Image 1 (cartoon, rainbow, N blue to C red):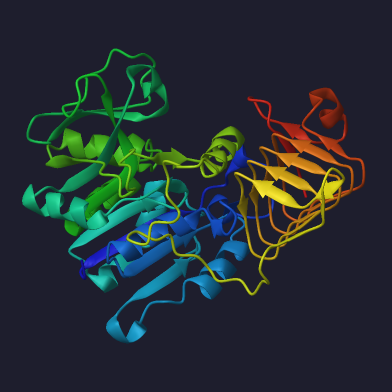
Image 2: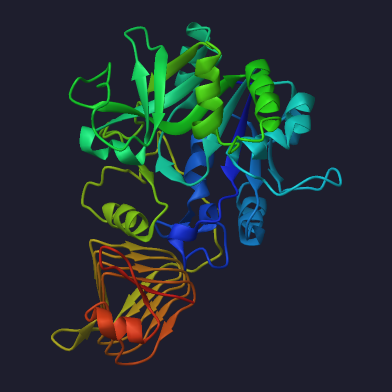
Amino acid sequence: MENVLAILLAGGLGERLYPLTRDTAKPGVPFGGVYRIIDFTLSNCINSDVRKILILTQFKSLELHRHIRHGWNILSPELGEYIEIIPPMKRSGGSEWYLGTADAVYQNIASIETERPDHILILSADHIYKMNYGHMIDLHREKKASVTIATTQVAPDEVSRFGVVEIDADFRIHGFVEKPANGSVVRSAFNPEMVSVSMGIYAFETNALLEELKRDAENPRSAHDFGKDIIPACLARGRHISAYDFVDMNAKKARYWRDVGTIDAFYEANMDLCAVTPEFNLYDGKWPVHVRTMQQPPAKFVFADEGVRMGVAIDSIVSAGCIISGGRVLHSVLSPGVRVHSYSEVGHSILMPNVSVGRYSRVRRAILDHGVSLPQNSVVGFDSEADRAKGYLISENGVTVVPR
């Protein structure tokens, strides 16, 4: 994998995840207690032995830059390894901000040409999954493909949310439809009950990618997007495009892949982690999720007055620096520095870093954003109209979000 370059697309605005993205880019949003969303894709790179990584940022990226600088300085420049952050830069008077995923890579062609890799991985920085990119590159080389697309399988009634691919028995892709409106699509070559869809993960032969990016940049009708423009153009030109059927590195082989781009998707993915045996395993030493080590004291649970107040957390993730001070926490994710005070109850909720829940408060099916401090006797998640009146956001599935 030493001559493989990974490019992480981390510049999305994250509008559907607002207000969690009000002050930071979507890949920089805390997830699962101690992680940031981008940590999962970066961990896949490190575990796959991909050690040359470019991260393309754009919107509200300061917090993300700091996270990468402090938490991912683990590679060796002496060995030619690096994680390089590249924000949009004015290279000429006509330069613009990134116009799409393909344009973001096109504007950094000089960095690619300097590195001269044999193959390029294009990765999203805001998905939760475990994949060995080495297996994908092996298939890409074996098939002598110009492009390889990582695919997974979904039920036919879900296809409107994905780019659907048509694959033959030799793994070659002959068709691609972006978010079809109905379920009348070709069933998967790997499972006739399912439909194969793109995961937005691509392996390119370098020359093929550079040629397509340059053509796309000259097309005024293009949206400059990989799914909408680059892949259809490759098909139209008869390039060899292969499919890599997703192999989940989780021990349960659950095909766990989540785009946490909405409040409800983000909430459900966090709640998944609280299960007794979650599909996504954070505790797998064979495929670890790397994380920035925070200087925090251990979590602490205080007060054990039976029948009066007890500091307790059940079926929950409790991060370092948390103090459960006579409160009760059930099936929740507590990020570092959270404080749950006496006689309060928190259930099925996500508490971002440094949240404080005052005495006698009740919180249910809610996300409390970074640094939120609930006063005593607060009630969140029990009455949607009352929550809206306080300025809280209510998601489509009824999750209450208390903003900073």
